[in-house]
Image: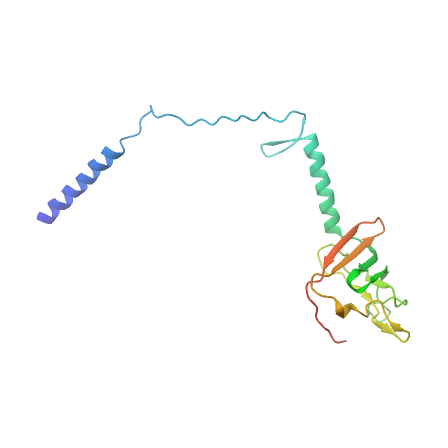
Length: 176
């Protein structure tokens, strides 16, 4: 019985203490108000995303970004490849498949060939550009490819002058 009375007394003391420290909330408590000093943008609203208005200037910027992103996603049809670290600056031609289903390679040992049935450089996926390492006459366009190091740059340009930059991440020797 003594433990029961002690417990009840402790609970009542805690309740009284709680109300003494933090009384019931009243309607007289101050309300928090936020004042915005910024004035809304001026101009004609041309679109609206959710509750945010979009003005003409902003829409032009959105359209420009969207166009650039679409270009990045669609990739380019390369006409030139530059690899400064190994002094490569040459044409890229489009190649397909041979009669037996193999990838074509350029006849000219100083040209490269982009595999047209594959992905375009700059799009999602892996683009393939082939070139000769050597021939009976001597070194081909990719003879010094093995000399590339991580961080070396590769530039691909399309016929409009749009240039994509790639960086060597690593190298791996494959046997044919």
